Length: 193
Image 1 (cartoon, rainbow, N blue to C red):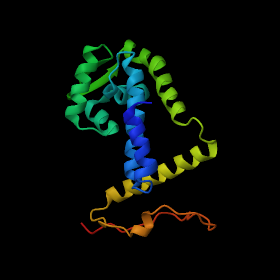
Image 2: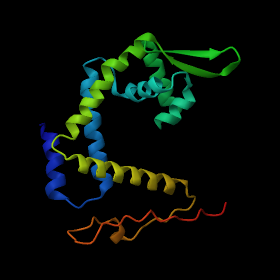
Image 3: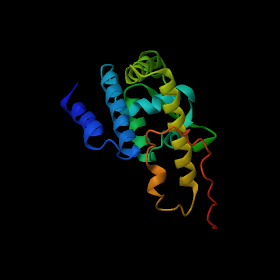
Image 4: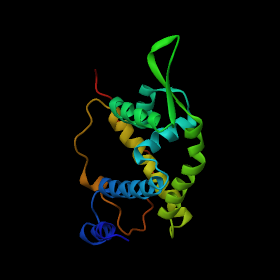
């Protein structure tokens, strides 16, 4: 375990054990990315190409704009990645004779073949991350993270979301014999346009 990793773990366990979930999730995400990046690098694939390859393995023949939207990145980022991936022989970009405006991205044979090599690396990263964690805890963590994503996506859609929530609502529940709150998230009305 590197000194950086030990420092992060010590930070979470000792310095700020009750800090915001967003910070903990960010550090977990960085750890996932770093672990996968190391594995991908052994195959000469930059981490930045991983997301695009995953999307294309599921939906080949998307426009660069569609790829940007699905990857959650800006179009210039996608353009740069596609240029590099094309140079590496992973994809081909084409304009259709009926639509010269859009550039469509297709996996090459080499790009398709990468799936058999790279997907097991991601699966290995996931398996390493859950070592020693009970199946029920993983199920609950997944359920909670999905609910958080849904809540934040709904909040994003609001034109005028509240800037603060009561601190009590975001504090983790301490030891209690009361059942956990399983109520649905509070629905807020959209502001008038």
